[in-house]
Image (cartoon, rainbow, N blue to C red; front, side):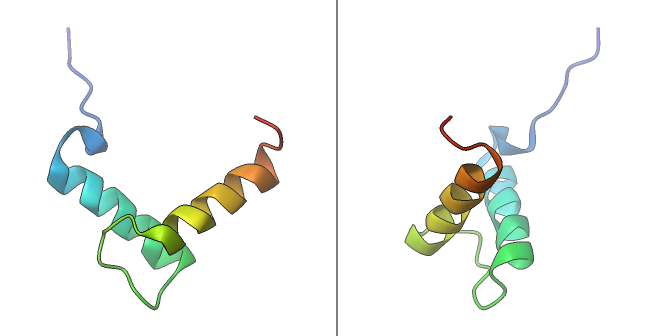
Length: 53
């Protein structure tokens, strides 16, 4: 059986995932670190597309 690799299973993968999110939603700083502004953008998107969950 094949194993599915999830990008966030490694530190480098997690950082790449956050960096890709930042490149799309916050171009002024895309260092791959989940800071307060990145978290706020993510939360706002979740509230917009999945309200009350």
